Image (cartoon, rainbow, N blue to C red):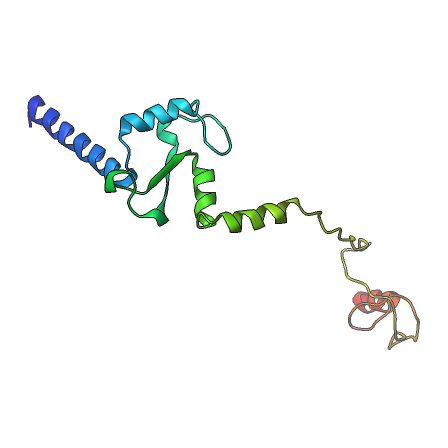
Length: 154
């Protein structure tokens, strides 16, 4: 393949991409670049700066055909996180409003349990030790600590 053929193949490919882009979103790539400049090179939601290629072209899937019978209704350029976030909520404003309400309500306070002094789990004696009758702390096998240690030494 010579240079001229490569150039023609590239032009066909780029024309196909531009045509597909217009059919999908209802805007041209030049219009997309203009919108990128109007958004100051940043995401429409979080306002963080990104390169043009890093921003996703957000459109409304539910509207069907957009401008001139092509593509969905174009909304703006979003970063990957914001675009995926909207997608996870199925672009539903009511679900997003409920999520905002959930995020702004006060946190539930949870009391922390008291730390266990040993690496072994001890329980306060409710019943006496089955060996000596003592009421000391015992392990899950109902031996008090002295009896348990004595049993280990044997």
